[in-house]
Image (cartoon, rainbow, N blue to C red):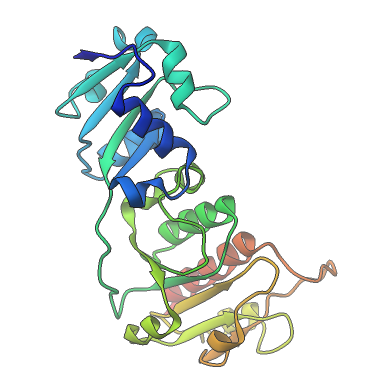
Length: 259
């Protein structure tokens, strides 16, 4: 166990950046997971952290699964841990992971495409839905929220570690997908519930989830094999993108189980 008390220590400076800068993981090559839920989710998926960091008040009672998870353990005073944390109530422990390398697109894996979805909460929620409903690949086009940013990690609640994630893509990169693209629309295409009742949702497929205000870009929409509307009998003009994604991905998973 290594004890650090100086806020000017290089590790502390890096952790502060990783915790508070959404794209620092790209520059530093590491990811910061704060809190027992995220850390346990990583361990469950077989992820080995390179470093574990504990607040001093937790170290003596920390479970063995945390204290023996990494090759290195560092303990810091509670006040210093609070400086690192971006949470209102610091979780008192965290893991440092090596940032994942950018993988290749898997052509036939059920996929969600994030077209400039910018809200970290929305992106994290979509990752959770993708993992829950068997869409194990998520492709983020340039302009989408950084997938491994602290806010997206927290909103994803551990879903990251069960997904094949590729970010920073251009539209032309999606040509690697060997499956139909499906786009949600407010004004064209059949209703989702009709396709579900007739078991006509393609699988595997790539669902296109668009920008919170602008929706799916015309360039992507023009290449979609199918446009789908979600019935909204209550009269709202549109749905939050994370809510729409959950409805669509659940429908696809249900349709798959019926065929």
